[in-house]
Amino acid sequence: MATRRRKPPTQDAIEHAVKALDKTAELEVQYINSFKGRGVFAKARFRKGDFVVEYRGELINSKESQRRRRTYHNRCAVFMFDFYWREKTWCVDAAREDGSLGRLVNDDHKHPNCKMKRVITEGKPHLCLFALKDINEGEEITYDYGGTDWPWRKQEDKQSDATESFEADIFRTTEQTPQRSSSFKTQCPHDPEPLPSMNKVGMNPSLVDYTDSDESQSPSTNHDQFNSSCQVLFFFSICMY
Ligand SMILES: C[S@@+](CC[C@H](N)C(=O)[O-])C[C@H]1O[C@@H](n2cnc3c(N)ncnc32)[C@H](O)[C@@H]1O
Image (cartoon, rainbow, N blue to C red; front, side, top):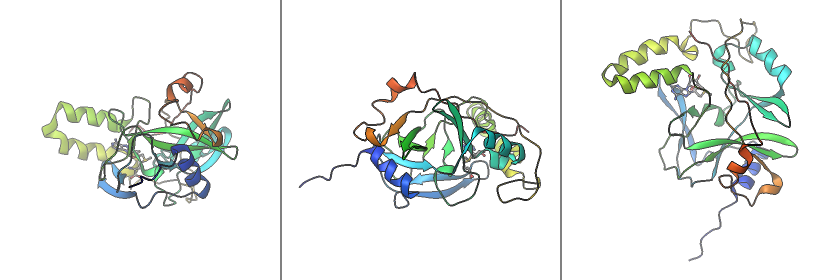
């Protein structure tokens, strides 16, 4: 029996990016817990190298990104993904709850199953997640947000130190996590009033450019050669309570 040829991952990413489409037959959102909130899970198997999902949002320049950071509450600013491209800083602002899946993918700096890469099409960069390994049905989609001092990572470290007290610790930390702070005033894209600015956490994982003409290249194969030349600054703003 003839096997169907797999679409080149970059081409797959470009097709989804251009149409602003998610793989809703293969991915779903699930509520995990009050600490992590929602996450994105595989409903089907992905193979290593596959395009999984785009981190979709509004592409804005650095000046506009800084302006928004001054007004957004942390629970929204955490959805701003800043990166370098063509010697400038750009930002994909995914703060708006638009139903897209990429914005809901959680961080895993120890065992991520995806990696964020730039895909360039029609002269614009798109931030796309590609599978670092085979991903089975039911697995949570994750990538390394970069940086070192995300508050939830400290909590995870505590978990491995003291497993028995984990539930209590989660509850206490949950109270301090920006998105859990329902009693705070919030400034998000749809909110009317400005709020004070938040702390920033700088991160700089490398992203890789793939363009319309790179379709034959697997994202995982030419990653290293691009790493040295494509340094990308990725930082979300978060609040440290
Ligand atoms: C880009 S959002 C991801 C979607 C988010 N979980 C939600 O429900 O909206 C980033 C936020 O998710 C949470 N988060 C991401 N990765 C996490 C992790 N590994 N552990 C706990 N919380 C995490 C943090 O609250 C963070 O501010």
